[in-house]
Structure formats: structure tokens, C-alpha cells
Image (tube, rainbow, N blue to C red; front, side, top):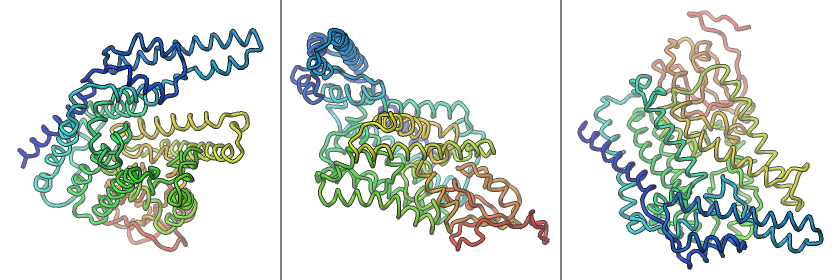
Length: 539
């Protein structure tokens, strides 16, 4: 079995190496036909840019980095020339028509968008690489080998780890799980990948092309960086869900929870949305609720849904009802665990890929205070941005209190949607634990938490007389809750941040903790400290 496990590790590393190595292979040659098609699709009107690109790019061979850099360089140069003309005509006066026409030729270059919106389509069409010419083979050598190797590495643990039971052996000694060099290396890779995904997707052309056959089969469209990411997300969750089955196979709650959250990710966040596109319907994740889905009320999304007939109208109404009715009702009966631990894709990745890092969450009072301030500030930001978005949608205005609504949307998308949720939210797993985003930044978690704190039947009850203060519950609480402190006093755990994963109860050797749904009377209790058989009221 150890031999099979080692073989699996080698195969997985080979697949991973092919994936990373594919970024650097191939060349890019822009033909006149593809260049003109790209110009028309992007609506580029700058004759300066077109002339320079024709002379310096068309018919020549580049690497992805050099072609992307050259396109941006020429775009910036042409924009500067057009703005010089605009300033000149503004000084002369009476040139409004010429000024407006010149403004239409300016190519706006924003580093956070230019690589994915401006250069990516052209690079995707002009690549000549072994990956592009052998897409199915590339898929097998990257995704296929990584998945097969991962499963071969994990499955033997059913036997090698001995009898069923949670084994967190050596987590604090292994460099990959104690913020050592291994963890730093993993964090660096995660952060780098998310930066490329969100801001420099034109450097991921070959990995994206490796997923092209799957995308064409599901939606009928070529793969994008988001399809590639969705496929990676589902693949990683699948492999690490098997790891969860091995680790928690004696605990039915964990097995069912893992299966359900995996199913919702595969079906509702990946397969169904892609198949909707094949039938000319909007891409739609039926489980993704505002404010986590912060673009739901953007004008382009509302218009797209309204233009899609009865199904689009149903999607719009469902999205609104999900946020204002379904979520609070479900939280009242089941706590926020129904979403954060059983449905949400972010939680699904945290519970599978992130499980080896759950003990790294900060349990200090300082972290708790920081958590409460920042997560609710993000919720306020999301609410203000959405309010401004709806105001401009219905009023036709572009500003609210002198602030451009588009700027609010862009700021939120960059800082919260990209940096916080992606780069930090997943990239910091090996540094701050697996629920960084859920604990500190997710506005939907904040909304769910407010309902759970003040009006819910959910709580974790404690049998303080049985507690031996081993600290397992606090150590493995991914949300940074000092569970032992509650257990020692026999107090119910009613925290807005608790996602009800149940791991605290699973690792308790004495059965002290129990996840319960019961009437909310005396839910937040003033239980006594248990000293032997006597009870002393805590005043």
C-alpha cells in the first residue's frame, strides 16, 4: 500500500508539473485576419494603434509575455497621442465634435483588467503550442494525472491509517501544516495562481486550452479562465472529498456533509450553469446568493435575465427570494451551517482542500475583535455598493452623492471580489487557516451570522462535567472559536461565526459537544460553572 501511495505522489507531481510547465510553452503569431477580427470585436477605433500594431505585431512571432506587453505598450502610446490632441483642441475651443470623436479612440488601460479583457482574446486565438494541437492529451497529462495520482496517494490510507478515527498526527510538526517552508511554498503557489487567474489570465492560455474539450462538450463554447478555474475547483474538491471520507469515515455527519457540499459544487455551481449556456440561457448558479454574488443586481445581469424569457425572470425572482426569505428562514431552523458547511462552494473548498490547515486559525481575543469589525464592514460596503447600483439602474443616474457607481463596483470587485476572496481567501490557507475568507471577509457569512446570533434554533450544547480540557475542540475550530472555554463553563456555544462544521464535536474524546436545533428560549444561557457535582451560579 505504501508503494501505491508513493506511486500516486509521483504521478500527481508529474501532472502538476505538466500543468505549470504548459504556461511557458508555445509561440504566438498574429495573422492579419485574426488581428482584424480582434480589432472589430474589441471596437478599437484608434488608427494610431492599428497602424503601429500592423507594423510591429502582425506576422511576427512572440512569447505570451512579449506579445501581451507589446499590445499594452502600443495601446498606452496611442492613448497618450489621442489625449494630446484632445488637450490641444480643448485649448483652441469650438472643437467639441472632434474632441468627442477623439475620446472614442482612446484605449483605456487598467492593469487589473487589461490582461484579461484586452489582450487575452487575441492571445487565445493566435497561440501555436503542443497543448493547442493536442488538447485531449494535454488534459490527461495535466488534470488526468494530477487527479489519478491524488487518488492513488489518498485511497491507501483506508488501510494504512488503521482503524477508523480522526488522526491529526504530526500536524504541528510537518512543515506543510505548521507554517514551515512547505506551507510557505504552497501559499506562494496559491497566491501566484490567483494573481494570474484574476489579473494576468493571458499567461494561462495553455492551461485553459487543456480544458477546451470539456468546455465544448458541456456548453459548446471555448474554455475561458473561469471555466478552467471551475474545473480545477471541482477536481480538487473531488480528490480531497475522498480524503475527508478516509479521515472521518466513522462519523456519519461528516461523510454526509462532505457528500452534499461536493454535490452542490459539482451540480449547481458547475454542470448546470454550463449546460444552461448550451441552451442559450444565462450562466446561473442557483445556490449563489447576494451579497456573496455581488454582481447579481448589476445592470448587465438584470438585463440579461429579463431578456431571457420566463426562465430568466424565474432566476431573478429566485435570487431575490433566496436572499430575503430562504436564507433567514433556513438559518432560523438550522443555523448558518446549512449554507456555509453544506451548500457554499467557498466552504466546500475550505472543508476539503483546507482541512489540513484548520488548526492554524487564530483563537485570540484580538483576532475575534478584528473579525467582527472587518466582516461587518465588508457587509456594509456590499450593501452600499448594491444600493447605489440599484439607484442608478432605476433612476438612470451614474453617480450617487458625487461618487461614480461604476467606481464603487470596480473597487468592490477588485479589493473584495478578487484580492480578499481569492488571493487572500485561498492563498492564505497554509498561513491563517482554511476559513480566512469565511471568517473575515464574506458578506454573506456576516448576514447569516447576524440571523444566527439573534434568531436561530441552532446552538452547540456542552456537557461541562465531562470536559477534560484537552483542547482538541479549540485547536481544530476553523473559525477561531475557543470552544474549550465554553465547554469548561457548561455554556452553549452561540457565535455568529460558527459554521456548524461539527469537527469540534467529532474530535472530542468525551462526547462533551453536541450540535442541536431546539426552541430558542434560553438558547443563550447563563449556565453555571460545574465544580464536581455542585453548581455555582456565574454572576
